[in-house]
Amino acid sequence: MGEAYVGTPWIYVDDIIFDGSSHAVVSSFAEQMSREFEMSLMGELQFFLGLQIKQGPEGTFVHQAKYTRDILKKFEMGDSKPMTTPMSTNTALDTDEDGEAVDQKEFRGMIGSLLYLTATRPDIQFAVCLCARYQASSRTSHHQAVKRIFRYLKFTPELGLWYSSGSSLSLRGFSDADHAGCRIDRKSTSGTCQLLGTSLVSWSSRKQASNPVLHSRTKHIDVRFHFLRDHYEKGDIDLIHVVSANQLADIFTKPLEFGAFTRLR
Image 1 (cartoon, rainbow, N blue to C red):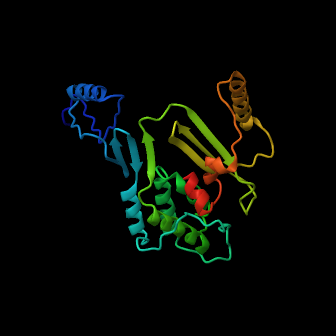
Image 2 (tube, rainbow, N blue to C red; image 1 turned 60 degrees about the horizontal axis):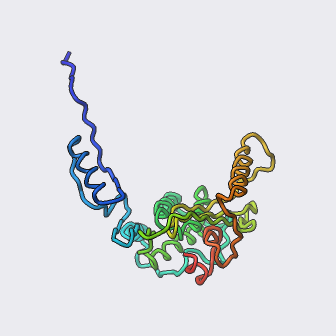
Image 3 (cartoon, rainbow, N blue to C red; image 1 turned 60 degrees about the vertical axis):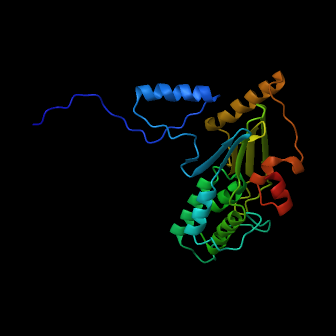
């Protein structure tokens, strides 16, 4: 029998990111943490989990240019012909049961890599989510659609998210849906995005669920409806119809031609 160890437990943390409203606040926090724990300050954040961060007096730019080039090389798309949009307006994916099956492992790997990239590339969100629906039984047509996304990334490897230091704190949200766009079940795709001033802070693209029968699980719909209606009547929020030309969420619901796509992007 060995002797029981009695002492102070050690906890090792690999990375901690912290931010503050001023350099003075950041320095004060770092000093306090250094007095309490053995730690090394790596300086201003520049790279974290595949995200590249550029900070300056005018704002912060977050992108994944290195990661983009890495996955282009990984899936042998580095020498592919660039494309100006992630998906053609003529693309209409379905199960394609008569199509030739492709390597499921590779296809899922491509989808997984692209999904991680959507953390800073909302412009590919719709195309990636559409292709991801066919991971269970991917065909050549699905594979070609995914390769088109990679060819678009070859054309735009440096794009990312810009957060201006001079942006206001006004919150705006956009919501849109296509009309029964899915060829299989005729469900619509909903797209949303929220901006704090000029900074995009969240976005989504998803196929609508089918709820033909109301039951207890859909009570949250009533709750949200009444919540929004009450705040609208109080004047806390304003609901405005947005014409298609200015509807930012349109980019999350369907493939768009080059002009409309780049303008909304």
